[in-house]
Length: 305
Ligand code: PPE
Image 1 (cartoon, rainbow, N blue to C red):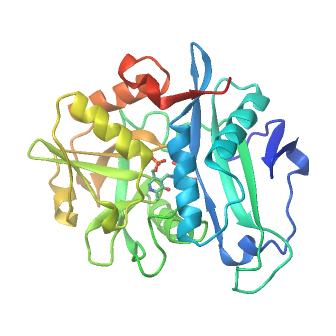
Image 2 (cartoon, rainbow, N blue to C red):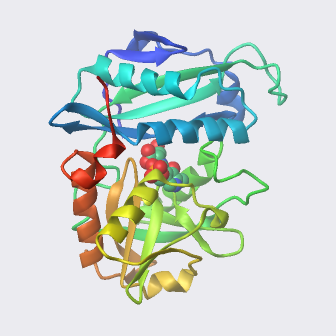
Image 3 (spheres, rainbow, N blue to C red):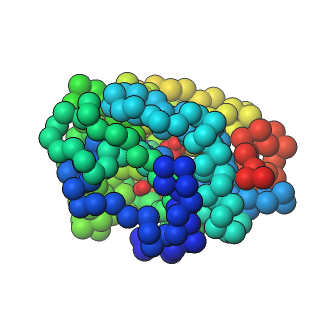
């Protein structure tokens, strides 16, 4: 999806002009995937732009770096303020936010211990990742021929740059085969998640979502949706899901920061009822929650000023 430029990008503590936010071709992370990133959204609210669950996102950013043994030169508070300053500098009512920590120019080779961590935060307007009508029309899913990496290969719980080679292989394969998105299975065959979203599956009236141990990212939207679903009176369980559960599910939906909540209309050409009532109810509550229109969830919003 093409990027729309905004005035400034935060680089190592300073807001620099968009066009000047550049790195050298010998940037370490460009060669070895040794970086971590986040995806966050700021939404338009009555009180100005609000960043959704910003502190949780930046805590996961710090945790991803820790898993990679990457030194993080900024505190949680500094990173949170950096995102607020960057969002405010765009003047936009709503945007997508991409913090990234990377090893820059100066060292080559796989030993990262001499490398210095650079941090950047960019924002731009980004539409619904799975399409504007992802709830009503639904997304056609394909089980990927690519396996989600195992915990001792590339830890899926860390949002590392290199991990996304796996997601990208699966996404492109699904699109070229005529589907909208891929579902990744763990090495043991259990359902992990999608290429850039967590997955929820309704079976026998209970909403199930795979655990982190099955190779899913600890999704912040997954966490928000779990709370919303329980508040709506549904039973939600973190549990293992087999491929066959997908084919006979009553409803399936995917969720993530970029994608928000999207219905699944089929898996490997087996139709899934779509949009289901549970998906619709959760998607509509989530859409209100992120915009500060549901008093139960206002604590999730962090204002830029
Ligand atoms: N799993 C993966 C693999 C993933 O990349 C994301 C977010 C999620 C689950 C959902 O996590 P959360 O956003 O905390 O609910 N994917 C981000 C990047 C998307 C991209 O293609 O770039 C996002 O949604 O911002």
